[in-house]
Every structure is written in C-alpha cells, then in structure tokens.
Image 1 (cartoon, one colour):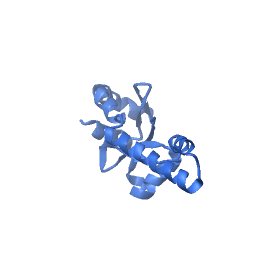
Image 2: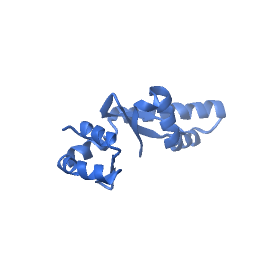
Image 3: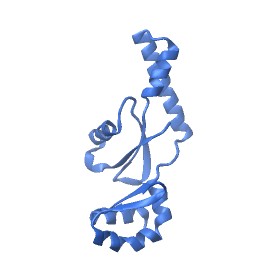
Image 4: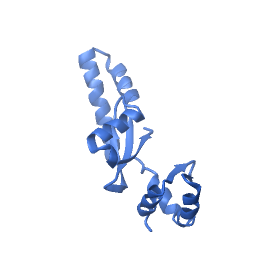
Length: 142
C-alpha cells in the first residue's frame, strides 16, 4: 500500500500521522492506531519521505530572491526607505510555506506568503483552493 493510500486509510479511521523529531507520531482512537500499526511500521521509510517537505529548489530560491528584491524596491520607492533598510525589512517579512492538496497528495507545493503567519497562510490557501482540498501546510525556514 502506498504512503498516500495508508494515510487516507488512517484519516478515515480518525488517525493522524505526523513527523515529530524524525519519527512518526500517531494520534487517534487507540483501537484504530493498533489496527494500523503493522502497516505503518512496514511503510515507515516511505511515510517519512512522503510527510517531509522537500528542500527548496533552485527555482524556489530564485523566486524568493526576486520577491524580496521586488518588495524592497517598493519600500524604497513608495516609503522612501534606504535600500539596505528596505531589503532587511523585506527579507524579515518573507515567509515560505509548503502545502499539499487532496488531488496531489504526494506533491509538496510552495507558496510565498510575505508577512503571513501559518494560520493566515492556511486561510489564503483555503480561499484559493477550498478548505476541503488543503491537506497540510508547513512553514519553511529560509
């Protein structure tokens, strides 16, 4: 059984599976957890790979750099800030999120959300795709 199928089965039984400090953490009804445990142990490596967002790609880094430069230029031009101050403020406000959708559960997608906290990023994705389609959202370190 694939990691995505196993996670769907767990969700139907009210069990959540998360990565915590490099290990899998299960929560839900104890009988359901016990039933799923053998399959989860067998698929542990695949589940860990599936649940961990990938590292940022070179294209992601380019998009982040471009977004920071654009926001710094806006701050410099519109707010009259010194370029160095504008770049520092734009960099500190930049947030990057990885998320998964129900129609692409095996694929982590990237969203730039300058100034957004995690809850605001979830709301933005729910508005864009529909709350029922958003499986998971995680903030990435830059």
